[in-house]
Image (cartoon, rainbow, N blue to C red; front, side, top):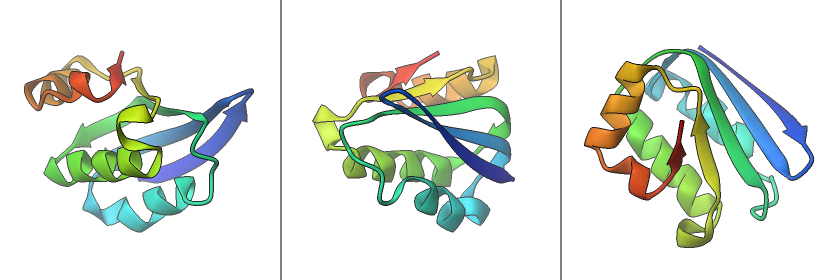
Amino acid sequence: MSVSTDTDGNKYIIKLEGCFNFAIENEFCLAYKGVETNKVFVLDFSAVESIDSTTLGMLLLLRDYAGGDKSNIELSMCSPDIKNILEISNFQKLFTIS
C-alpha cells in the first residue's frame, strides 16, 4: 500500500494504492495531519484493491480531524465493491462518494 498527496487549489488530494487497511494507518494519518481543515479532502480510491473495517475507522478519524459535520471529504473513483461496502455502512451520509 502506498499513500501520496497533492493539492489542486482548495483541494487536498490523498491518493491510495493497494489494500487500504490497518497496515497503513500511520502513513494515512501522517498524510493529512497538519493540513488546514478548511480544505476539501479528496481521497482517490482509483487504485485501491480492497478495504476492511479498520478503513472505516480511519475515514471517521479523518472526518473528525477535518471538522466533523462541517468537513468536506470526497471519496472518489471507488470501485463498485468498495462503493457497496461504504453504502452498506451508511457512509454516504458522512462523505461524498463517487
